[in-house]
Length: 131
Image (cartoon, rainbow, N blue to C red; front, top):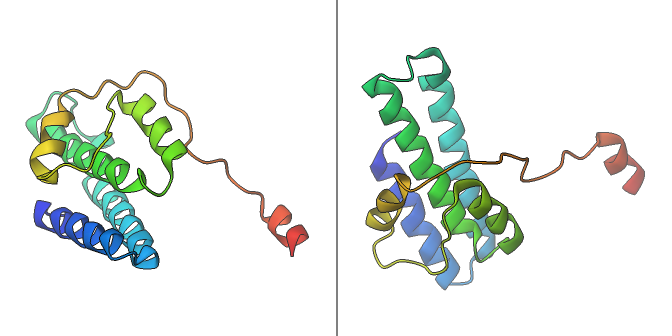
């Protein structure tokens, strides 16, 4: 994962949203989420000393991705964004001119106090029953 990849996804997302290409916009969000999941899986910060600089770098990068997802979700899922804001203690109420600088500035202000699932898991039987 590179910062350039995240910046590219944010840029494409903004363009897709401005052009009302909502399907592509959603794909951008999923791509960013997948990138973050892959990054955490590869780096396995839970195996590192929490006081190491490597751990700090990995967590900072992961938080950058989380805030980027929070930014992208705002126009699409405002209630989910509200939950993310409560989780991170960061409110994003506008689309910043320079997303990268804005998000980097917010990383050190994150205070996680109460963690809860953003979405509830849907039982596959319910999906089958609905069809």
